[in-house]
Image 1 (cartoon, rainbow, N blue to C red):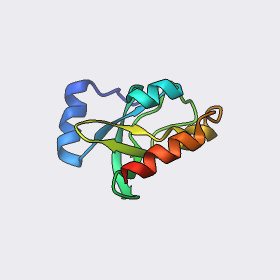
Image 2 (image 1 turned 180 degrees about the vertical axis):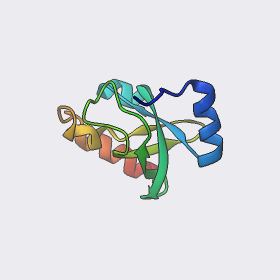
Image 3 (image 1 turned 120 degrees about the horizontal axis):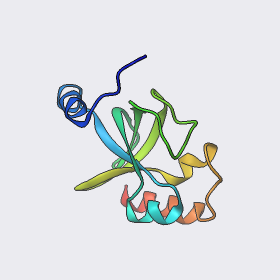
Image 4 (image 1 turned 90 degrees about the vertical axis):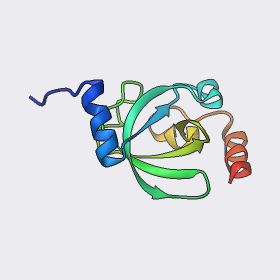
Length: 110
């Protein structure tokens, strides 16, 4: 069985390999406020001015389908931690009621 890394070991990997923390919101309100479950990720592809994709480096508790290596779309929020795009999580959880509002907000930031 693989050993689970502690925060110090993860911080060392972050510095060495460019790992970032990305929040996975459990519901739309968490998305709006930038909250959620923090997962480690390796930046992969830049999608736009403030959108990018990353490969997760650990499994999600909120989203059982998001396992190590899953590619997640996230948006950067300046000095705050990046947040997974709410609409992109719909395959792993119920689609949001506010899809159009979410997409409009993302596009306004680009």
